[in-house]
Length: 302
Image 1: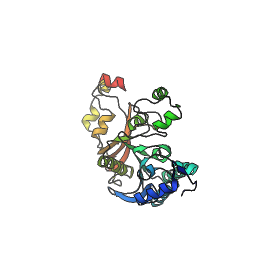
Image 2: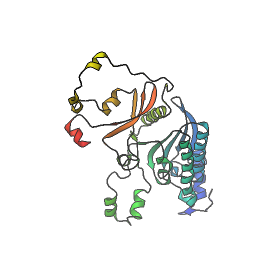
Image 3: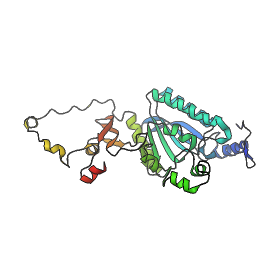
Image 4: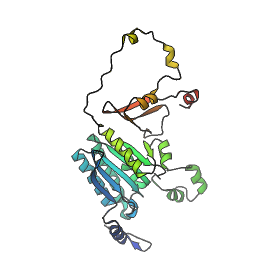
């Protein structure tokens, strides 16, 4: 509703809403529906960028919140596909309040032990990026997506007061791209901007977070050591050999499936630590290990 009687350049918010609703066939910029993703029932939330830039207003915040509440009650995961310019300025501070409201629902869903996957599309800005888009268990972005709070023009004309040199100094090349955000620990996976590849990645992560196929299967017992193995003399020099097995070798050959997750959610990606979700013996698991490489150059780099 246009409760502020907002207008800009001679166009009222009421007229903008009416036009957007007629174009989209809906009353807000978010759709929510349960759907099957490779055998996993999921609440899928999607921003419609064609409806006022997929912005977050009161109707959108209410719909996203109800989606999380429904998923929590039903005991199912949530996938949020974000493509938004951020909070809707035409609704003032009430649009900003939606960030907190949705975040409360996200936390309740997390405390119920249920998975939440965020897919950040091009672009994901403002109040959406500052709240639920970055609060997921696993954060996936398409390559080249713009992700940030304020856009470049806003930063240049407000914080930098129009000073392009100051902006260039503070905002380096590739600033606010998905690759830049990944390098700073805020994303787990960046996939090519191809719907099929993106959806396949989401399906793979969902399957593992949901326990994986055959999750109730009994673990595979380790075979007992042979007499030859028990009687063999230990050669401790092999522990320093360049070709000794390392974590990345085991991840590639031991597990039935492995999805690497990067980023610590804080400052960056540690080249020495690799980890992610995997399937072993029909069970889903979390894998972490030291990765150092098989050459002097690789060892120096890590």
